[in-house]
Image 1 (cartoon, one colour):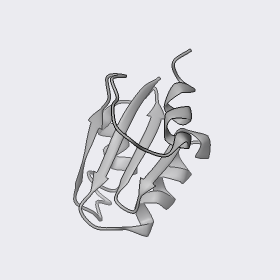
Image 2 (cartoon, rainbow, N blue to C red):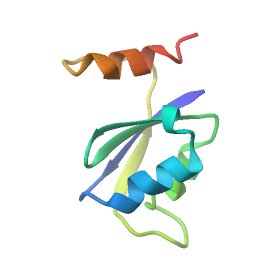
Image 3 (tube, helix red, strand yellow):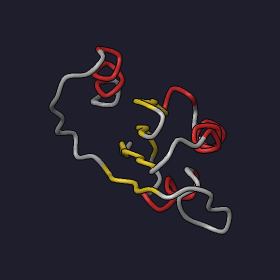
Length: 88
């Protein structure tokens, strides 16, 4: 599975609702109101459409980055545990 960072410019309730509709809730991690992580076998393009950033039903500005399993920082333990789930 790939892990993607979804970053939108302004809080948008429809983004989290859409991500939860398209992906299993366990595969979406909300960092804050404008940043989410998504686990999927799909491409960044698909995630950007699901987040409402691209496509015919676009409703928010933002970007999607594919992560390369290199992480650093200080964050809630739940974030590190979520990231570790996919290490296999």
